[in-house]
Length: 441
Image 1: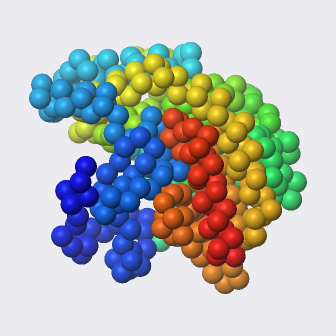
Image 2: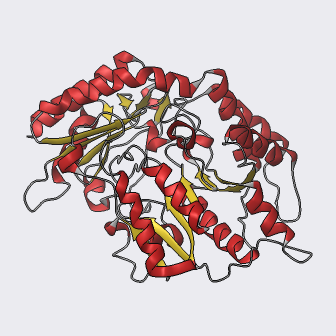
């Protein structure tokens, strides 16, 4: 494509950008105008290698013809149809394709439009289930420090990133938190799952002692992503599962980041050997071509909520765009690519090379920790005194200017390339990042 034909904004005034320093950006804009394969291109035609799969989501790479054509075909056939008391075939087909991939028993799929909506939906389903089974006193929701479950009030409340909460006042009532699992002193520079910290799951027993039988559900990420890549200690999730079972608490996995091959399996539940009662997903579900999220639940949860209700609506919850035809078409095409190209297998095969490449940054100036699992890595930098986040943001800007897109959260660089990544791409991502870290030291 000729660079003269790439889209350019007429002005920067109207768009209130999300999670952005709007004032800085509009003085120093960095634009993306086209994407293909492993790369973005600026309006000037300059290539920027994607080290983040967009935003943890373009697992199959960019501009996949199969997905584009599926969306176009569906748009020509039927652009929209409601799913309140009506159905359309492609939504049911998409749900069946998702259920084929989820762990055994998680066979019921509720569609949303994002990971944030999936989180709030999962929490509401958990509360509805506890009420339906005669446990209406179970109204308490447990999250985890440094957890991220989107930006709805439910997800923010069980989430544990302070910056996402402090601007908005009171959260949901009846919420408590487990401690996070990050132990820099004992687990620094761990490759894969850390050895120390399994006992932190026992804090759930303390919360049960404190709150009694009022806890409805616990929500955690199998691998915490947005907080800076926190990998669960060996045995931690298994212990959480055991405690939840013992006390009648539902276990919810937020798989918005870890789903669809990111850590070398269809879902984190499979790779880590723990099956939750409810699982949220989004991002890689449609390769981000159309916004879509989903919640998978156990058959028991669905049957209990539906069969205990009087005739009529069983769950008073839903979205105008639940199961949107274009999103469903994108999901079906994406999951077809996922299987045909064995994206989880490709990620697993690349993982050893990825691990060694990311840990090669250990001696770079200011690097205080490196964490990795699957095709995710977090490189934690020493903050500048009085300026938290400034060092990593300078690295982000330097990498972009040098042709590689990374993501930063605080002073942590988070990497998550498309699962079609190859060794030369890894070398370029890590080499550019290394140069940037040295340059801004």
